[in-house]
Length: 131
Image 1 (cartoon, rainbow, N blue to C red):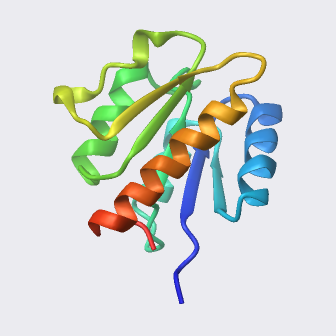
Image 2: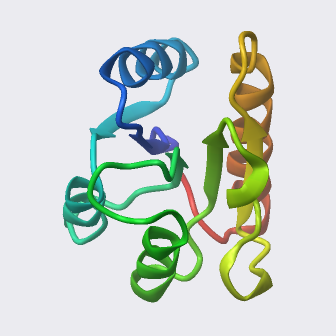
C-alpha cells in the first residue's frame, strides 16, 4: 500500500493557504500548513517526512531566497514549487533542479496541481522521494 504524499503549503495569506489546502486534499494529498518561515522550519525538522513544499517566499519573517537556502541546507532533495506573483523567486539556489515555479494568478491552481503531480509521480518512479 502506497503512503499518501505529504505537502507543506507555505503562504502568508490564510485564504490562499486554505484554498490550496482544500484543492490539494481533494487530489488525495496530506496537507501541512505554514504561515511564516519559522513554521516552515518547524515542519522541515519534524519527524514526519515531507514530499514537497508549495512556497510563496513573500513571508513575513524572512527574505525570499533565504528560506530556500535554509530548506536546501536541511533537506537538499526536497522538491519546492514556488507559487508567487513574481518570477524573481524562480531561480533555485545553486541551480538546483528541485525548484519549480508557478505564477500566482487567477486560475493558477490547475498549473500548480499539474506541476505537483508531475513532481510526485516523477519521484515515485525514480525512488527519490514520496510514497
